[in-house]
Image (cartoon, rainbow, N blue to C red):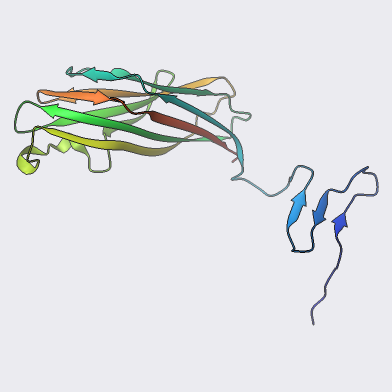
Length: 181
C-alpha cells in the first residue's frame, strides 16, 4: 500500500512565507536553510588564481604565486584543496624532476611529485625533447582544526638541472572548500 501527499507548497504555522514550493513539473524550490542532514555539506568556497609567470632552476622550494585564504566556521571542518596549475620544464640533462609542496600557513599538507605520475622519480630518455608541459592537478583534504584565517599556497622546486616554468602565459587556480564534518 502506498500513500501520496499532493501539495504545491509547505509552510510552518508560525512562518510568514512558504519554506518549500513545487511547480507543476515537480521542481522544488527551498526558501529557507536546510539543516539536520549530517556532515559533508559544503559550507563555503574560496578561489584564487594567478597568471603571473614564475620560474626556478633552484633546488629550493619557491612560492609559485598561487594562494588563497579561508576562515573555517568550525574546528571540526575539513578543507578540500583543489589545485590546477600549468607548467613546463626545460631540462639540461637526461633526467628531469621537480617537486611541489602545498602549505597551510607554514605547515606542509602535501609534499612530493608534481603530479600523479610523480616526476621526482625521473623521466630520463623517455621524453624525445628537452622540454615537457603538463598540468599539476592535485586534490587533498586537510583537517586544520582551526577557526582562524588560513592561507594555502603552492610551492615548486626544480631538480637535476631543470628549469621549471609555472603559469607561463596561462592561469593557475586554487579552490578551497570548507566541508562540514
